[in-house]
Amino acid sequence: MVKKTDVKWVSWGVQKQAALLAMSKPMTPTELLREAGKFNRKIAFGDISRLMREFIERGIAECLTPQQFTGRIYYLTDYGRQLVERVFTIKIPPIDSEFNWNKYAVVIAGKTRKLVLKEMFFIKGYCENGITLAAIRKRLSRVYPITLSQTHYAMSYLLKAQLIRVSGYTKLRSSKLYKLTPEGTKICEQLLRQPPKIV
Image (cartoon, rainbow, N blue to C red; front, side, top):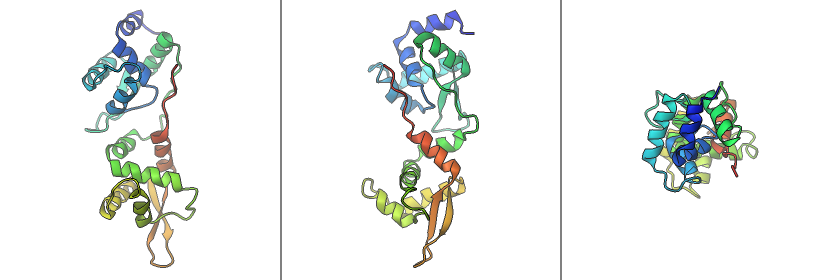
């Protein structure tokens, strides 16, 4: 049951309201700042940090990756979602309890890892047998300056994390072909998921 004191507490602050409206999916503080800025242009990164501490103390939000030093991800608790529904009449979906938020946090903390994984997601329908490391790097270098060693490092992490797998070898040079695993696909879908538009 939603406490009247929490309803009152949220109603008194425009920054609290902006942060709660922004938390329509699990996010890092940087992502939260960007989304909350759509509701309150004056909100700052320090406000987000303070609000997350206050939300956690009140049981409104939780950190899904407390052991991560960078890439901490926050989301509303069941109580927090009830509070948002009561104050704003908006239904926020629960999170997938099977989802690996620690792997997700490590992916989003590394720009190259994130780019490689997303690119593999976009091309999976075109490369049925998989794609080589060199081909991924070539595709990414059109829009983002990336070296072969950066691509190799990112692929090595993704392989170790079991977000991609070796799916075969090329005929000409026996280069490894890589494909997304089901878990890698789930992480990409979460990366690309857009927060619902709130009118």
